[in-house]
Each structure stands twice: as C-alpha cells, then as structure tokens.
Image 1 (tube, one colour):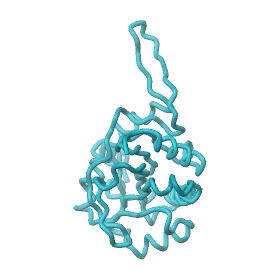
Image 2 (tube, rainbow, N blue to C red; image 1 turned 90 degrees about the horizontal axis):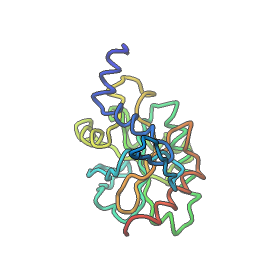
Image 3 (tube, helix red, strand yellow; image 1 turned 60 degrees about the vertical axis):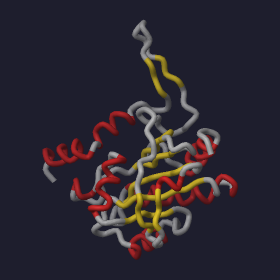
Amino acid sequence: MRRGALAVGLLASGFVPLLLGALFVHGRSSAPASGRTIVRESAYRGSSPPGRIQLPDFRLRSYRGALVRSRGLRGKVVLVTFLDTRCTTQCPIIAGILGEAMRKLPAQARAKTVAFAISVDPEYDRPTSVCRFLRRRDALGPFDFLLGTEKQLRPVWRSFYVLTVSKTDNPNIHSADVRVFDRSGIWVSTMHVGVDPTPANLVHDVETALGNGTA
C-alpha cells in the first residue's frame, strides 16, 4: 500500500488521535501556572487513556451465535481488543495472553469480567475461522469474538476509533491493543503489544478496575 494512502487511512479511522492519546503513559498529567508538568501515577499498569471515555454503545453477534449488547455489560469489567483471524503478528499474541489472563483470574473476579475481540476483517472472520484461530492459541472459551458484516461493524469501529484491515489492505496492520473498561463503563487502561500486555498485568488491571466504578 502506498504511504500516502496509508496516512489517509490512519487519519480517516481516527487512529492518529488515539495514538496521540496513548502517549500519556502510566498516569495523567497537568500543567500548573508555573509551566511545570506534574505526573500523577496511575493505579493501572497499562497506559492511561485520553480522558474519561465511555464504552461505546453497540450490538454484535458472537461467533457462538448469541447477541452481545454493550448496555448489558454495565456492572462488569470489560476487556476489549480488535483481532483478525488471518493476522500472524500481534493477534495470536493477544489471543494467547487474554486466554491465559482470564484463566488466571480468581473465580469471583472472572464472574464479574467480560472479555471479547471485535473483528477488524469481516470478509474473512467467520465462526469456523474464529474457532480454529482461538483453538490454536489455547484461547477457545475464555473470551468471546464478535462478528458482523462490514456495514454492521463500521459504526462500531468508528466509535472505538480503530484502524481496520479494510483501511490498510494488510491483515497484519490494524489496531491491536487491549482496552480495560471499569464497572461504570469508563476506559481506564490500554495495553499495547510489546509494552504492557502480560497475563499478570491484565489480571492486575482487572482487579484494580473491579475496585472502581459502581456495580
């Protein structure tokens, strides 16, 4: 893909603003009158998101067949990522880490936590390919994978500000972070592949998020 087209795709998808927001790592900062920046340490191990962003409203079908509504997730900690079953770089890593993290959560915490991936490649992501992808990563069962047509998914991608395969024409180039939303639906932590996401870090941030928000 030509560089100019990729740049346009990044801007159109909202990926650039999201990337800029993700630069505020491990804490929020403020600039007092003196001009000095004060960094407030976050309780989370992931990067601090830009502002208080609410979990977007959506309805998508699980690869298992059930309809998943974001409004029905209030009161739970929600882990969201964006995967492509054709991806051979970041997606397999994320799936394996998420699967292990969900298994490591204490039973009481796991009952109050929902984890799912949203497809960024609807032309190829199907229930059969999802099952095969998750089974290879030992992640079949611990978390869900939400599917849809491009028409159904486009407003969801837009609301999450994600870069998709349809923008890059490359299954290995798309948004691939893990976002943690607390029980009141506020985005509280972002984990980037190669920097933050380990099973231990995800368990820590889930347990931290369970202590925040209102059930």
